[in-house]
Length: 257
Image 1 (tube, rainbow, N blue to C red):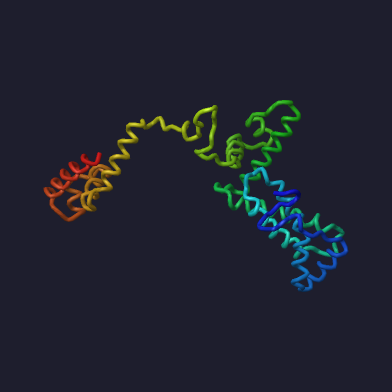
Image 2 (cartoon, rainbow, N blue to C red; image 1 turned 45 degrees about the horizontal axis):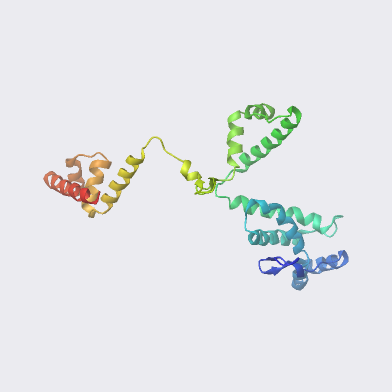
């Protein structure tokens, strides 16, 4: 960035043209008649409108080049569908089209897909929370919001959780001079100790190093709980052979572990 120069998608925004109302109307008539060059000039003359709209989404952390391109799609849809007989400015008509296109892009590219009905419930809950906060002068509980909306509290909780942005395990939660503490450092499964987890991982690695037949025997015997006779019938060898192969495989695994 230098002065008023900002480059998005390789476009120097400081050089973007502006069109007068009369020129824009003339270009619209030509573009709707099939004039490709008029349509191109019309798009170029309204790129500043796209830039002004995507600034609203700057805080979401999205790539601005991507939003600019998506916004341009919304702009082109607006230009192509604009009715010259409407008593409304082109920018007034195109802005909702650009915003809608960007919102669809953000929704479709969200790592967590949320249904439209649940998203609508969440937005209604947010509006209800604001209304209750204004009336009561304090933050309402989910049960207060549920009563206000006349729906079960569980629906409010699920809807509000569904629209939360996902948190990365590598997001720092604390840092003071030394090494940062990340979200993953505070995640722990208390059902399984660290020693048990390491032992299980070591066993999996040892099993993966066995020959195919030995690995199949160990998995069926110790992971699926099958008897030596059942394994013998499955593989097509005798029970005595299964016993010998199993013993040799266990000895081999002990070396790896």
